[in-house]
Length: 78
Image (cartoon, rainbow, N blue to C red; front, side):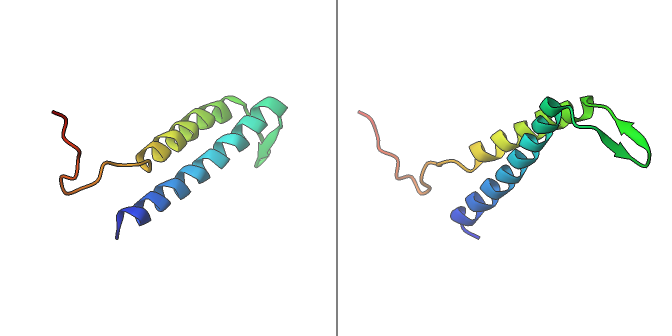
């Protein structure tokens, strides 16, 4: 697997985490009610989920960013 494939995978995962983060933020700001099996789910889990998924999104996008070339092709400074 080459570096480009890894970068695409990291960006895809980061984008998915970003979409989940936005969905959680929409739930927070719209104060949408979620009921599971007759139980109301409070808003705080959405706040926690937005922080975690937002952090993962940023982390993965940073990991997928440009890297220095391998093989010692760095320019030297004199």
